[in-house]
Amino acid sequence: MLEFEGTMVSWRNTFTLDIFGEDGSVHVFCLCKWGPSTFTLRKRVRPSGRPEEQTETIEMKDPTWGLEYDYFKKLCATGASNLDNDLWIKRALEDVS
Image (cartoon, rainbow, N blue to C red; front, side):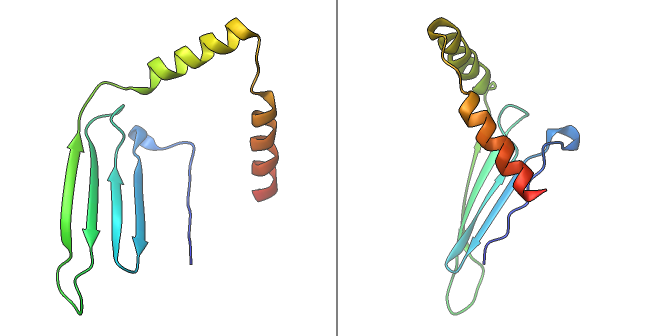
């Protein structure tokens, strides 16, 4: 079973991601653009017990703006457009509403 929940608006720009599986789980808290980002991997201990856990925290300046700006400049320089992709996203969102 898979369950997804998403939002475009979150107070204080909070981001969390939790993925649970039979043998463990993965957890992401925050994106580095808003502060330290924490990645946690938990591996299930059988038959029972506290899971093994590895956590890594990354703190850096927002890496996305530079990539987005470079992509935008490339589109402008080549006259290319990602309109088809935008229209696909629009249709997909209309289907779920």
